[in-house]
Image 1 (cartoon, one colour):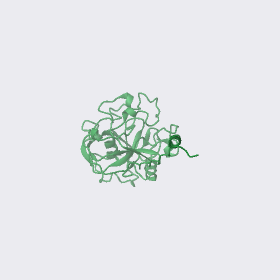
Image 2: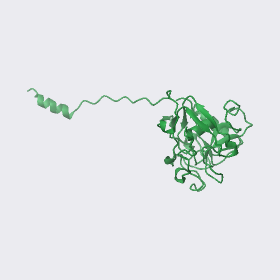
Image 3: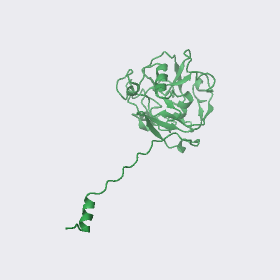
Length: 259
């Protein structure tokens, strides 16, 4: 006996044809973007690369340094970027580095390492340490902020000497302190090695301070725990150390020109 049309319809309803699989969209890639003139012009873009989340920094200009700051932050001068780059969303962790620094835990920032060790790790990832200018721009943006979130120190937005119990915190523990590009812990937690040799301002990338083969110069670290120095966690504050220095509270993050 034949099957009625009603029965066939009921059978189809109970056993629907599987939907075709949806293609996974490709990850975002670095594409040319227009230079920004204000922090609000940019919406953060992030991408996971080999298990590490990075955020894109668009081209634009900012005033590097501060004429109202310490002597080595002066004179302020305009620095411009004509191409985007990518910077780690957080400081490199113990787990990512493959060993622990002074403070144990997979998600603690990897500190207590030589400048050369930080440099070589970034190279192993196909990247490099950020220059002073790249680091500061990712933290301040065209608005030239003193801190990633604004012009006033907000203790709840960073890990510093008033709340850290003399130890580091897991990276990204203060999301309200994100910079305009979405980078976390640019202020506080640990200082961060950058590629640049310690030299007078104005910053000029071609004057030899970015010679990574020079083992005789002190290297700069940025953005760490607030201390007795005014604006110690500010985006313009800069400190330096011999390349053979290890410090519990100095870590790093990496950049890439393209993904």
